[in-house]
Amino acid sequence: MGFNKVTDTILYVGVNDHQVDLFEGQYDVPNGMAYNSYVIKDEKTAVMDTTDAHFTQEWLDNVAAALDGAKPDYLVVQHMEPDHSASIEKFLAVYPEAVVVGNAKTFAMMEQFFGAGIAPNRLVVKNGETLSLGSRELTFVFAPMVHWPEVMVTYDAKDKVLFSADGFGKFGALDAEEGWACEARRYYFGIVGKYGPQVQMLLKKAATLDIQIICPLHGPVLSENLGYYLDLYNTWSSYGVESDGVMIAYTSVYGNTKKAAQLLADKLKAKGCPKVVFTDLARDDMAEAVEDAFRYGKLVLATTTYNADIFPFMRTFIEHLVERNYQNRTIGLIENGTWAATAAKVMKGMFEKSKNITWLNTTVTVKSAMTAENEAQLDAMADELI
Image (cartoon, rainbow, N blue to C red; front, side, top):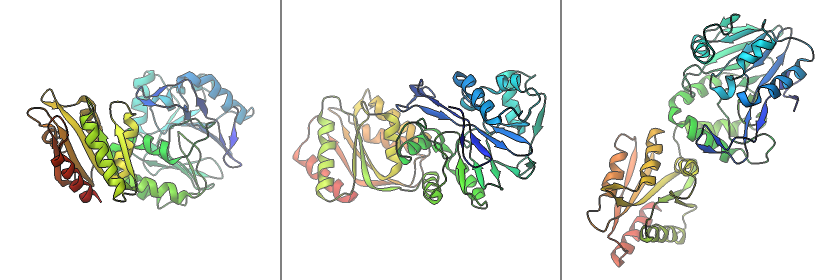
């Protein structure tokens, strides 16, 4: 791939990964992933982060092409997750005089991954400290738990660039044509979503900077309409409602619970609901379901009582939501049980520690198959949701 220009003095040297099927072993990435790295050329030269171990040589070739015979003075490590740090040791084998820049937690993790002898030439920086490359200074801003404790972002005041670590990242390689928001939303809620307060703190720090370009570690460089991306990140990290609509997430063993969920969807559409998302948790992508649950302000959960609990896919779905601090939402419940129906009670109990959950007055209990009374209850539930 070589390199691409971000500005006249900042070069992109990242790689595209079309070998990976599941990012982190759990997220389907049909269009692959990008592992981003950058070279800043000044009186002194800095390389920003490395790449996944499977692409070390390709990345080193890109770095060499960008350096054009020069040697790097610094390697800045913003994030120690292996998709960005796995090539540190081999980089230092090629450029042993380079000074590795990171914070105290960065180097503690680096030694865990590579051993105590790694990076003998190191610069340990503190929050807010700067590094001069000549005509520009890099300012290091700590962003703990976005989404690892050692994370820091870097601001280049000369070119007004924020190197944002995993912030503003997305699934998908850079040679795949697709919109930004869907895969960025799925990436955010899957990977960063638990840490909304920490992202909010980072956004407040970023608001004090004059940022014209954002260079993330995944996904495209962002240089136009930055307000759009910042506004979405603010909504996501504050657990706000992005889109008006209702998500219905269901599991069904023999089809009766699905019939109830489908009838509710039909009633909502007939009553003018702007968007109804209908998701089979056993068959549809779980990460997409989590994304939609956070996107919309209203959620209906429909499932069966199963082994005195709830159907496993529903339990997994709710666990994903609660783990990511699901809050500020309205939830309705549909349960089905031929005997001893307890699904609604179990589902509601799982949100016990969730903040600002509004429960619909109507809970629908189907006993094996739907009745006229159930249809009336679903009509009442639709009215509440509208």
